[in-house]
Image (cartoon, rainbow, N blue to C red; front, side, top):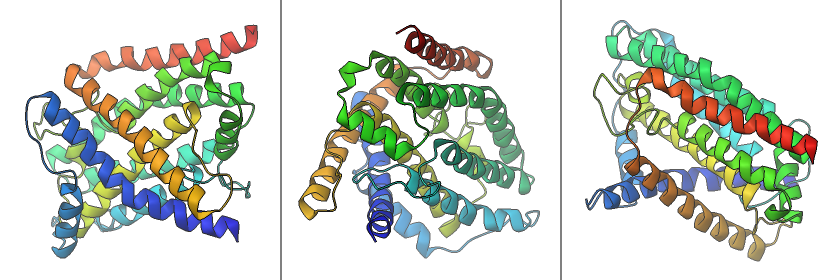
Length: 311
């Protein structure tokens, strides 16, 4: 019963807060660039408007274009069960395994890239090609980063990772502070942000993520945008709760859950400000220069393992 309650609470919380975090980052970037920016709740209104419109399909598209949005939101919603944001559940068969979590995110990315190719447009094909090229370089680094975290905490289960860091202050494990830089690079890369991608542009020379969903309209576009927001929230939650898990509830009490939700919002607000400032202070990198950034994440993760072995 406690796990069922966890599923309901965590899923609803992820769905509610994900658009808000996207809006927070947009607001921070606007303020950093001297602009007023859109209201924080604008994304909610945008999603509601898209849900009221009709889907329009290219005459060249197949069933892949039609099912990709539903597969994307399904995979990311399933992945949300693996990253506790307000309450740490008891271990349940396979739920929380970090390798399975990565596979769910990769499947969502695969179908998005496949949908970009399906319509036969030049933009979609270009975006999918770039996305797969970037993924081919970053994915080994992601595996090493995850392996380093699992090696330091001696578990592959994400809720258990959070429980361990909650019980022991972060300052007792300097290697986690080191791996946090790699996690931040993974977050920036997997959410298509500067310097890897620019989510605010539709220029053919720069866009990657936006090119793959350019053919979508109406509810399908809303599902794609929502799945992208959920993915960002989960990666932010992974980084936040490994470094600063304070406030996570270990018991199903209304007060504890409310405090945990408030604490996560505050911590995610700080991280959203950091991401917004980082994007505003960083220029978009050339595609062939991106491996340097990925190698930094790989090197820091490998160094984490070496330091942990020596200590």
